[in-house]
Image 1 (cartoon, rainbow, N blue to C red):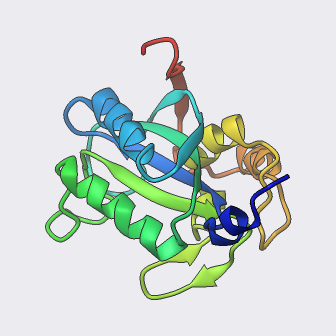
Image 2 (cartoon, helix red, strand yellow):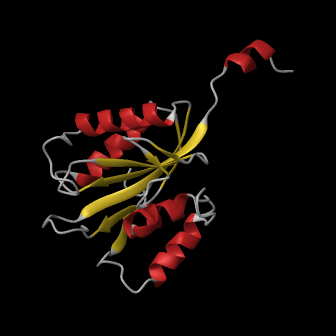
Length: 184
């Protein structure tokens, strides 16, 4: 029988999905350090393979290394976002001085938080560009193919299939380079 006091005082948890990316310095180390830091924010449930991806946008820059993480956390969405931004900063990213979508040591995007749908000045859930980003959907569909977008009702696998069939992928290319276990 469970202790009712312990049950009543435990914080509720949610499953969050986080996209990771890096294209400066030791990209793999930046991602691995970010994954280690995420363990301090909850329980890392799954980590995707690492994927090398071409940069998207008009800024000339190096290829990215991308991954996705599933994290069970008691932090609320805004608290989790602040923690992700702190991890980015600790890894050398300064969002105030770097150009948007420019080169970065670490980029962490909160893709989803349970089935939350929200829009504030600092956070939109689910991530508003999630369904248009092959470099996000490929790793997300690997670790959470049945995750369902709360707005569209489509699974990550379906969103990926639809995007993969799209005529214009904006030059997006995604190449799997390893799984975390292979090079740990």
